[in-house]
Image 1: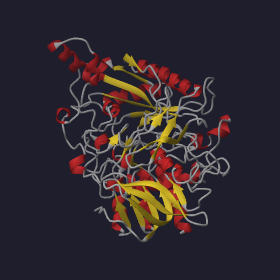
Image 2: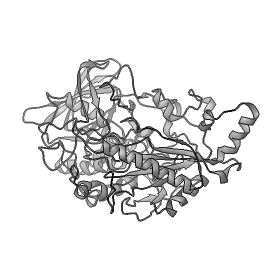
Image 3: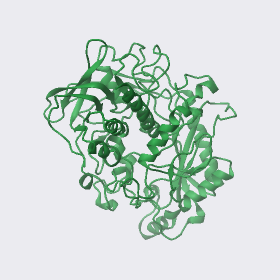
Length: 550
């Protein structure tokens, strides 16, 4: 059981952890398990799964009446999980005219682990050492061999379902049994394999059998609104409970961190935070400070911690902001499945997956790096395609029923965006949030290489859909707005040279040796795959280093 406090801790802790998402939760588990005392601060309240999560509701029983997650996100709302939004009057951020950026945040204990897509793919040296192959940017200051043992440890704890395929660009992991393919996914995957593409099932932090006291998934399909049985990995069920069980964790929700505080001698001594409800200021003392709020929120804290930013002798803090490329998609119908019997296809909320296949051996003439794709379809909770169909009455309803089992979609689930210094997050000197803390001004745009990846993905998806015998009815017409994929990384990059990076390969600050930054901030590149598994592996690796020092 996780207990929380509303008191103001006055003793000094071995470590203060800011944030309770995938990385903050893992840091709490790792450090308390090694005997360290930790104070964990989160800006939001403590959710109650039975009250705040979707559970087993029909679409018409939900406040959104079954409106898709993407559309709810655009409206900055969630049916159940509290304080999840893109724009909020109390928590503003700014952008330049004509350069939109979407910052999806979750102010609740558990953070975005409560409603992430659960995609858990390992990076390979095709990602970590991409600069050595194509000459652009910088390599990561670590290799796959350095991080592989920590991928193992994360997967063994959280539970990742998947199939071992032997693809060198998508390393296999410590898998639970993979989820079965539905009819649409099987047809699409077989088409991709015939084309020589590396296709498998999406690897998911979602249990296919009981694991470490958590129940297996029963395919209710409400994953993105919070899993009340614990089958989907999140901090509330997987990492915070073992940390609490040690008796060495103090968790204080509703605590908005303003800044990291410094002592004489160039080391951090604690943090300044504000109670979300009373708006009173407090300080906490710690020997080590772990900033794991989220990519952009962590950077905001560091930028507000000192003139020019804490640990910013390199001048790159806030720069090289990255999201991954999205917006390429193709959807339609598979005629061979029309009129088929109704099926419960949507419960597992995932599908087939195509690993990156570009620029591995042969160089593409129009772009460097690559992308991955996801494929799903069949009968979802709501037939969203029906909104675009002409007609009325019984004939329209019958046509929707006939098409329902045959609906299919392919989309770019992560394309590598190239790092550029001018993409950045800095402090807006004219705006503050509801607690008087200066907010971020975000500047992030796509480059020519990003747009070429998007265009190539669109054409490849058309080829796959056609190979599968499908009828295409819709094609994505524009690249996604930066931030919209919720894969933002960078702004606090790691590297070997303190003159060009903020952190070392263990996510520890070059300038301030007792401050660690976990999350997406340390990433020098986005890689071709979903970033969360790599964030957690870096956290475990960094905590191991911290424990050795402590």
